[in-house]
Length: 391
Image 1: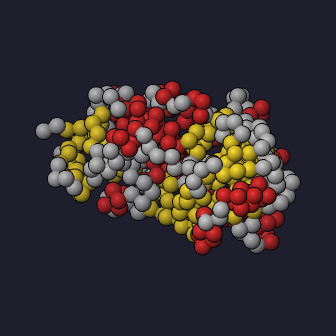
Image 2: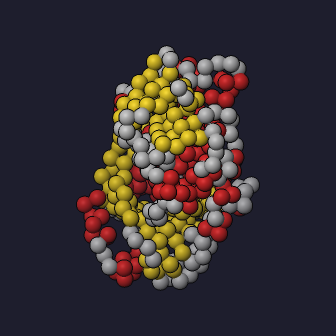
Image 3: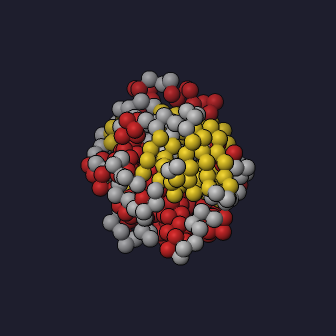
C-alpha cells in the first residue's frame, strides 16, 4: 500500500503552492481535484488580477513559480490612492516612502495558476489525481484514508483541505466557520485607456458601490466594481460603449477615454473565517481557513503566508523526530496563522462596513479615517509594511 506524507484536497494556487513547498522539503504529496492537468496547465482567463506582496513574491520564488510567470505581464504597483466619494482628498501610499522599488505587483490570475502548476508538473514527489473528488475520508491513529468517487482509496499521514471558503472537507470535520455574506457582487473586466496610469492603483468608495482601477502593463487597467447584487445584472447587460463611458465618468476621466476589452465576469461576495485551522492529522489552508473580502488584496497573500507557516511547522517537527501530523504540532500552525489572519479579517470587514454605510456618522468617520491614515506615520507605515515586507 502506497502511503503519502500529505494528501491535499483542492488544486487551487494555494493548494498547489503547498504541494511544491512540501515536496521541496522531501514530503511525498498527493493532490486530489476535479480538474484535469490540461485545465491547470492552461487555465481560462477569469478577469481577475491578483495583487502580490513582496513576501508572496519571495515564497513564489522559493517554490520555483515566480520565474515561470511571463514577466512581461507583471505590472509594478508604484502608488495606491483611496478616495472617499467625490472628495478630492485621498489616502495616498507611495513606494518612495518604503525601502522597496514598488509597493507590490499585479498579475493576471490565470498566469499565476499556470506558473504554479508548471512548477509541480514533473515533480516526482507529487502525484496528481485528476477528475477526482473525495467521497468520504476517515482519520484515526493509523493515518488518513480518502475514498474517491471513482472507488479508489488513498492513504496518507496528514490531510490538508484546500477546497475553498465553502470547504466540504472542513464541514465534514465539524470545524465551524463564520461566513459573512455582503449581499454584493464583484464585477471585473479589462479596459484600455487614453492616458498613462502612472502605475497608480485607485480604490474609490462611491455611495452604493466601490470602483477599483488597477494598473496593468501599458495603457490598460483592471476594473473592479462592487455593487449590490440586485443591481449587478444592470451593469453586466450594459453594452460596451455605455459601460465604458460610465466607468470613465465615475473615475472623473483621470485616464481619458476608456474602452472595455474583455468579457465582464461576476463573482458573489462573501468572506469566511474558520474557528480553528486544524485537528488531529487534518489542517486547513487558503480560503478553507480564511476567505477575505478583496478590498485589501490580502486573500491570496494570506494563503501563501499560511503555507509558508505550515511548511516550516512540519519541517521543524520532522527535524526533531516528532509526529508532524499530530494535533499538538498542527496547533502551532493554527496559533500562528490565527494571529496573522484574525485581526486582518475583522479589520477588513469593519472597513468595508464603514465605507459602504450611508449614515452621516459613517461619512464623517470615513473622512476622519483617511486623514488619520495619511497623517499619522505609524499607522501608514504599518499598512505599507503589510505590502512591502519580504520575510
